[in-house]
Length: 323
Ligand code: AR6
Image (cartoon, rainbow, N blue to C red):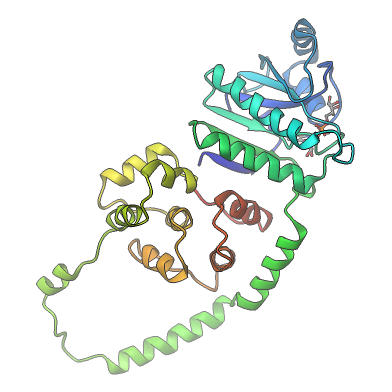
């Protein structure tokens, strides 16, 4: 999954580089900065920072990771929130871009970001999250890297309140308890059983001939029909390039349900097309799964930005889309 939102303490992340929400003087501060200095070893990290001296707002500098599991620490100074009148959005975006470019220059394959400026610097969480996700996902459209957005405490995760309420309402109206579904299924099975012919009309040969497309075949056909390229598809599905090659070269590849759904989102399928694609891998959308109901909400809204869907899934403690 090229972009993944995780709940963790960033100092524990096993990645090539973690990003520090620093100050322009590169001095040990509070928040995530304090935690990083503490875990890396205050003295050595401060010495390395002092040797660099300064980091203008929106810029990024790099030091080694010292005692951290990460090889490097990228220090970026995010903007202090001043009511939005001091180009804060551009500066926050610059913090993410410059950190990502610096990671790329240092051949990092994986990077972990905290939500820069959303603590002591007071940037509104909802807007900061949108900037983080859109800037990182845009960068990933043309670069291969694994990027984690690390959320320390759920309270600082800024999913739009309006979206949260709207999804909640949809869940309330559409989520069906497992017991109810089970009862319906039993009744359906009873009907089918009662009406089943005593002997099958079809031979095994007929059945084999009738076998439908596999998931991989259907996916590749849909990509063609939608005039999309492979790269566009797997990037929009938040799917790793290597996994996509595997699917492409194996007609009988059996994907996980969330992988199929990620492709359905990338291809902007409607609910019935999504169910068709899911059925090639033996799955279906179910009203007894909160995860499925949230997916259905976004498909019905025709809202196909996978990272926005993942923000919502994260807020509802569900697995994320992609692989
Ligand atoms: N792991 C991941 N995220 C964390 C952690 C952690 N261990 N601890 C806090 N966060 P902040 P800023 C989250 O205040 O707003 C420092 O003094 C936290 O929940 O650390 O950019 C610097 O030296 C919040 O969402 O950074 C600067 O002077 C996010 O990290 C100034 O604060 C950022 O909060 C920078 O302020």
